[in-house]
Image 1 (cartoon, rainbow, N blue to C red):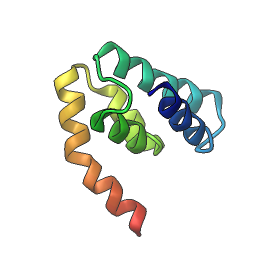
Image 2 (tube, one colour):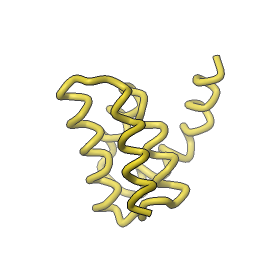
Image 3 (cartoon, rainbow, N blue to C red):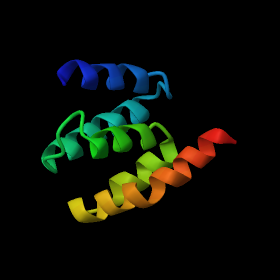
Amino acid sequence: MRQCAEQIRDSLSQFGTSDNSDAERNQVFKVLEEDGIEEGTELHIRTTTICQDPDFRKTYLMHKTKISRAGWIEENYPIFKMKLQK
């Protein structure tokens, strides 16, 4: 599992190189850990995938509760996938 998380982190590093982007990506992983979302789970993978996009990442980090964040990911993951297909 740790290797999977490291691979995700490595792939995320190609999306933006600003200090702010790095800090936000680190915050996403911190929030997932605090929420008890285990690495390698579907929710963890969806979250790290959708948070590659700076706008989605900023919105995700604005949510205050675990339930709100999880619901937002489930609702927006299909939208993110469609955005990638365009």
